[in-house]
Length: 541
Image (cartoon, rainbow, N blue to C red; front, side):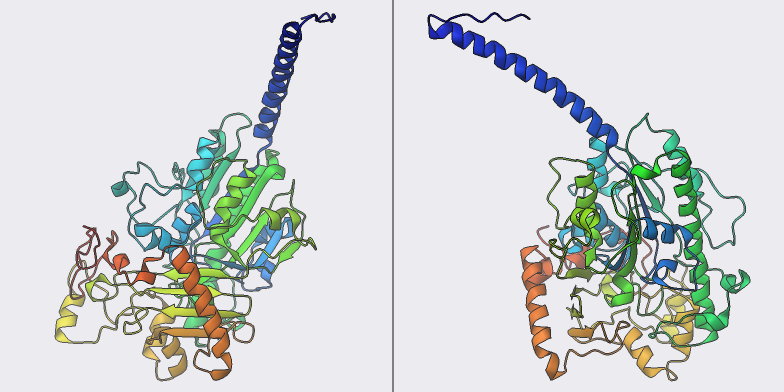
């Protein structure tokens, strides 16, 4: 279009000319805008999220832990950031995974905030958001679970479509899942469109129990060199159990290494955010299902070669609920749902910057019911706040056994123990996974009275630990006068944040004890109907 300038004798021709110029300018800007969006869409990062099933902090080579060889985790840490203070929202599988997916704490998620229940459809996951933004999404192995997502009206797992068709023919032992995680990742990549960004959830089922007893030693690991956490007794049974656990961490890592090599060969690794972590702590007494350190403190390494500076270490407090807003921000997703998590983007892209504020002053964690371990299918509600130096825990029902009721030997209990579908109740404490370590502690309780007490015994309403001097949480200092101010401050911070986030426990509600359990129930007294709401604790029904 050719424009001729001339002297205007009135305002009308000027206005017409200005309209034409404006229209042309907007059209040009529109073209550049479209080109800009297209380029940004093509450059959006891929995301590979690798999550182990039951692995505590420190148990990776990059942390200096010598009982495991984790070249994949170590590579991600060396090419990106190794986090020293990362925490899950809950020390159990399904509530922890629901919190990761939604960027919310468990007390904000109704049924999804307890173990083996359901996942209400009203809670949007970051994977849904990524898919709506054009990402190719999928998972292999364990996604959200255990639980029943279909009863909430969902047609697929909250993580997305599954890719678990391929199986491994020659497994290290029969306790390891036959899913070919790396092979299924290749299938997933083959199904994406050209240059389409992807999100893949590698949900390894290891190192979840059961283990093949002695598999660690069979692989060449030394019992004499096994490193034992201070809360476990030093015995051959414990050492062997820890080595079996370490072997399964290595299996998780081996498939991840295969995936990294696939991306490298395809020229995709440079623009892929790789996150490696775990859903909760190790499946040992005083770890998994506990709000103490080894139940909630998990490994975390994040790399993005195109953007993140290598070989960085971050000691700041991080919650895994921070991952959801981080992924959405880095993927350029607009109008994301409201989340409690706080994006890690400033940490990832400006780690070590002198003018950057610390990411968090604290993290919050919590737990409700784990397994069916008590009469009436009740849980053990507790909340915690972890600062840089201290861990404060509030136990709402100190009259309950924290890891499940003990089941003494009586004729009636023996009959129940042999009832099909309810076997394995004796000796109780069923929130602790069956293991050689657990069995050894139970049969040698008199030999290790203090360790037995902290792992199996009842707990006071408040607990406090000095993490710097007591990282294994062996000494509860909540009743020591010199820590009264610390305890009061942390209690106030915890209560105010729980109230602000709408935790039902803060108003005295017991609605969490009403939520159905879709995994196995046991023959404890009272309510034990599988997949049903407990009417005694239901609200508004």
